[in-house]
Length: 121
Image (tube, rainbow, N blue to C red):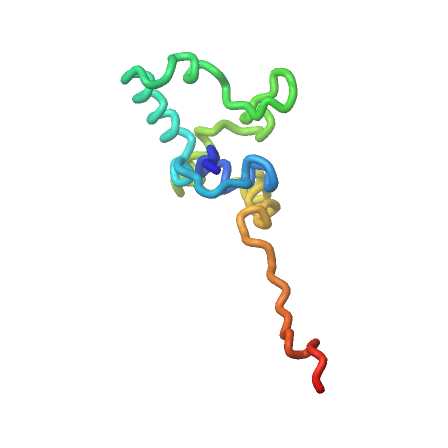
């Protein structure tokens, strides 16, 4: 399964762990949103995508008029700068990152020594 999350969204956990985060690889996962837009502009210029993809505000489509930036409370441009290390994380960004760490990690593995549970003669 191919994912569509970018570096900004992964960094702040802006994805659903068992939904759009349930993927095998993230081809744009190392690109901040501004770089994704750069690729989209190139794809539009080359005729691979219609121009309308650049005109639609990023949205998970969870409710009418919902936008990512409105829900996040900051612009992707600001998030890009923080993720790229051009400015320090603000409190909101740090909280989003810290509170979603479980989404970016593999689940814990319960270690069992099966020998302890085998019936011995």
